[in-house]
Structure formats: C-alpha cells, structure tokens
Amino acid sequence: MEKFEEKKFNVGKLVGISEKTIEEHLKLYSGYVKNANTVTEKIIELSADQEKNAYLIGELFRRFSFEYNGMRNHELYFDSLSDKKDSPFSVPKKGNPFFDAIEKDFGSYDGWLTQFKTIALTRGIGWAMLWYDKKDDKLLASWVDEQHLGQLSGCVPLLGLDMWEHSYVADYQPSGKKAYIEDFFKNLNWQKIEQNYKNAME
Image 1: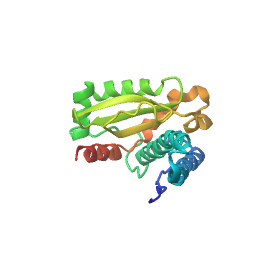
Image 2 (image 1 turned 90 degrees about the vertical axis):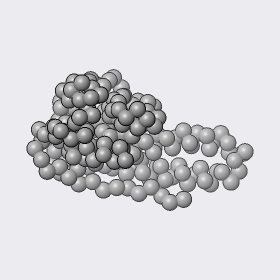
Image 3 (image 1 turned 90 degrees about the horizontal axis):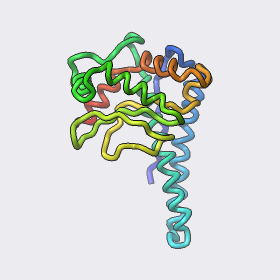
Image 4 (image 1 turned 180 degrees about the horizontal axis):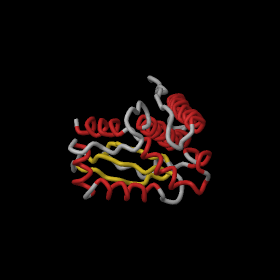
C-alpha cells in the first residue's frame, strides 16, 4: 500500500504566532503522518489472521481515524497560513462565490466570524471547522472533539482552526485563547480558503 507523504508548507512570519511554535507544531504533524503509516502497516500485517487478531485490528482502525484526521486537519490548518502575500488584516474578497455563500448561509460575514470564534472557544481540545455540505449546497460550522469526533459526514472541510493547547500556549499562555483566535484570522490566507471552496464545488 502506498504510504501517506508528509507535505511541506511555506509558513512565513506570522502575527502573534511564533516561528518556534510553528516549528514544533509541524513536528507534531509529522508524527501524525508517521503514525498513520505505522498503523496501516500493522493492520495489513495482522490481517494475515483476521480471526485471531480481530480485537487488535478493530482497535487499530479506531486509532487510525485519530492519526489520519490529525494528519489531514493539520494539512488544512498549515495550508491556510501558507504563501500569504496580502495584508495581515485582510478579509475574504466581496463578490466572489465563497463570500456570497457565507452571506447566504450565515446572514453576513461578520455574523459568521463571530459564530466561528465562539465555536473556537468551546471548552476542551479540538477544532473549529467550516465545511461545505455538497448534498445541500451550503456551508456549515462545527466543533470537532480532539480531531476525529464530530467530523460531518459527506462534508468537505474548508477551514480548520486548531484549538489544541500546543497551537497557542507557548505564545499566549493558557488564558490567551481569544488573542490566539484573533491573530489566527489576521494571518489567514483567504485565497486558500476560497480555493478550497471552489475545489469542493467541483
């Protein structure tokens, strides 16, 4: 079976979020890729005797969803911070399909942003996520516990805000979640999110 490959990201200097935090965060991402491959290999190995190893295989598939979603969620996160060339205080460009979809499904961009920031402040560790529901052609927002409990079936992730403590504590301290969230949006490359929406629509 072909292995999952670790992706590279061009995350430049960010507002508030230090290079050291990004460096350490990328190491954690690398671990998810490695673990997803290791779990897959072990499942294949144990499947030679599925009856004997049924319990172990079942538990490994449970672990696989954690490692796989950790890998993919982080790819979404780092990609949204990469290759940024515009102002750190930019917002989605009005008049494009993504901005229009936000206004249609959430009433306004400001209304959606307030709601999304509220989701990100959910107690516990996890992710604030923006999705495209292909079935109903609409945007949805949700909280994902850890990184695998609460994924919306059939929906394409467009934006993921990592709210695990490792993403902000070194720079903002445990009490600095709100400041981290504000800075995340200052650093967001909206062209990436707009492209994610365009790709999801295809």
